[in-house]
Structure formats: structure tokens, C-alpha cells
Length: 522
Ligand SMILES: [Zn+2]
View (tube, rainbow, N blue to C red):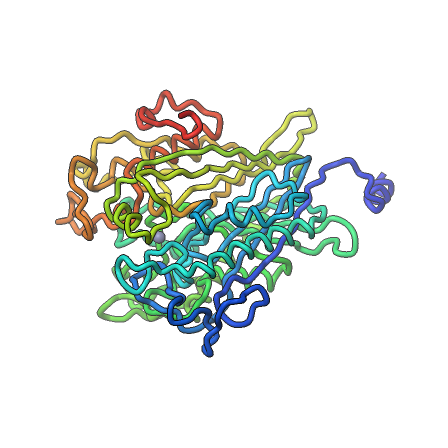
């Protein structure tokens, strides 16, 4: 029987599970020679000229790039089974958009070969804080656009190139899934300024795809890693382009397994990397098995690529453990769905930036799309079971919105409660053992903050250029920074109620969804 099975496999006549996958990694670093870049290259290697500079995104304005440590990438994995074909793309950028006018995923889609027949192209950003400004907020001064238009058109072309290449390379694969949440990984996450609650999505998920047949049989084609915190360990003074700790995660993964490593950030709202907030006690910061001394005054570690490497290797170690304890699951079918949502823009800072032409989105509302992808196994009795699910989030969603605000809300300060109802929990609505969350996809609309803790809610005025104080500021709770980088208090119900609908659920029992209106239901 075994011999027959092998024979059938060798001739490709098995009618069993036929998951196929392809992967590609295309550099998008605005530095050095690149055959697809026709614009100016300075003697330093950086792209641009006096008019167009590479401004680094994510911290303060006026941070010009001065060099490159490692490449930024557009990395794609295409999955194909039973007439459904989906591309998952990760960009080492602060964020990107589906449609930002002259650039965005819609422009990349025009460059895909029509014969590829993709049902969905899902593009997510890692939210890298050590790469170029792709949004416009980090130019030389307030109100001055930090985007380099020709570079963004180049990024669109490279997204298309990565997807085209990944489809060309489709081969039959087997899928292995893993997840882990070791204490060493959890120790790397910190809430911005210790903003309560002290809650994180502390689970790391992995999907590894291994070639099934032929000369490459047994070789790892790709390893997808999904974890949840801000890639900003090189901090605000760095001017050397890098993809931050995801670079070192991918390097360690590829060294161990071969193939292409692809990293996706998940629900990282308010979740920062260790060292971003002063450590309350001790002389050193522990990263995996390594210790980095703290500055006695700032209580923060010195920033270095060595430390960033230690962070990346600690995350990679968690991925190794996840795979060691993981399971191979035959995938027979893919299902992908999408759901359009809108939200008003109520942040006066954003409205002013739109008016100034700095932010590409315009008008008093934004639209975006939520995606749900399931990888399904046929059961022996004929039933179907989702082995893994992928869900996208259009920005930096607070993790408690995924796991459920009601159970994971702050309880330190009852008087801070705005009185708004809790948004529906998403995690219990998912069914599979392996649940991947892709943040900043396809859009980066900033923080998505639960309404019960969103300050200031109307009719309280939004303090322009300032962070609203917390009701428990006297107890040391920080001012509400995230709201200043949020489209609206209405984003949290728009995203969570939209996901309930995307997953086929009813929103009528959720008071937080009373005003919800899907874009497609208008
Ligand atoms: Zn952020």
C-alpha cells in the first residue's frame, strides 16, 4: 500500500490535498542600485535629490535617512487550492494604503498579470519605524509632506513583482502550523508609557510550507511568522534604514530552515518593544539569554543593532519552539471573504493634514476593507474544518479589542470609563486552532482605541497638538497619546462590528454596534 502511494505521488496522480504555494522577496530599500529605479541616487547611495528626500517615518519629523543597515522588503506568499488563490504580502514600512490616489495596492494590482487569477491580494505593513515615510506625516516640518512620490510608485511596482514571482513559483506544499507564548517573548512587550490595561496579544503564530514533490521535496519553501509589537527598537535617533527586529527574525529563520521568511505584525495598538518605556526596577534589561545595562537616569537601554538582533533572535526562538511543537495539517480548500467598512474622520489633526494635502485620504470619512481567509481541511466524514484563519485589521488595533474589551479592560480607574459600551470580542468568533492576525492591512489608519477609554469623546473638545489627560493622571496614568494618532472614536465599533459581519455573525445583540452601518449596506 505504501509503495503504491509513493508511486502515485511520483507521477502526481494523487487526488488528495493539493495546497500549492509560492514565495518571493523583493527589496524596496530606497538605497543603492536597483534595476527598477530610474530616479536619482546620491553619492551616499540614498535615493532622491534636493527636492525629494527619504524622510524616516514613525517618530518625530525632520529625520532624514543617512544610510542602510539591511534591506526593506516586499515579501509575498501566494496560497492556492481548489480554485482559490490568495496573495499575502508584507511590507517593511510604517504603513500603506489600498488606494491613496497616485499610489497604493490598487496601483500594484494593475501591474499583475491577469492570467494569475488572484481572488485577493492582502497587503500588510510591519509598521517599521526605521524606514521611509509612506504616509506623509514625517517631512521636514509640520504640514510638509514627507512622501517621495516616485519612490511610492516604485513600491507599487515591487509589490506587483513579488506577487507575480510568487505565483510563477507555485509548487505543491504541505502546511505545518505552530503557536507559542514563552515568557521570554512576553517580556519583550510593553504598553506605551504603561497605559493600562497591561494587556497584549502575546501569542506568536507560525505557518511553514514545505515542498511536497520533485527535486525540491522536503525543502522549506516559506515560513510565515506573526507577532504583535511595534518594530521600533532602533528608536528615534537612528537614521540608518533597517527593517528593525523583523530583519533579525527572518535572518534566523532562514538560516535554520532555508526558504523565504515572511513576518507579519498583528494587533500592536499600544504594544511597544521593551526599552520604549523606562524599566521600573533592576540594572539591566533581559532579552532572551542576554542582558543589556540600563542608563541609571533614563532607565532605558542603549540602542544598538546588537540589541535589536537579540530581540529578533528571541522572537525567532519562539517560532522554532512553535514549529517543534506544531502539527502538519492537510489543507484542501481556501475560502476568502471581504467586507467594506467606513468611519467618519473626527480627529482634527488628521482633518488639518488632509486639508494641507499631507495625508492622501481626503474628505470627512475613510473607507477600508476587512479580509478573512480560512485554510480548510476535509474531514474523513466529509465535513469541513478550518485549520487556520487569517483576519486583517486596518491599522494599529488595541489587542483587547480582539480578545474582548469586557474581559480585558482597565479596572484601575473606574472614573475614566466614558460610559460607551464595550465592542464585541473577536477571538471567540474564530474557530480554528491557528488564528493569524494581520495588522495595518490593507490600510494604516492609526490607532484603533476602545470607546470606553477613548479620551476625549465628544462633546469634549479635542485638544489640538496635545494629549488629553487621563482621569487618573494623579496616579501616574499617562495622557492619551494614541487618540492623537487615531482617525476617530468610531473606528473601534466600525472595525469590530464589521468583523462580526464578515464572520457571518449578527450584531443586533451588541449595543456598541447600534450605529454600525457597513459601506456595502448603504
Ligand atoms: Zn504605531
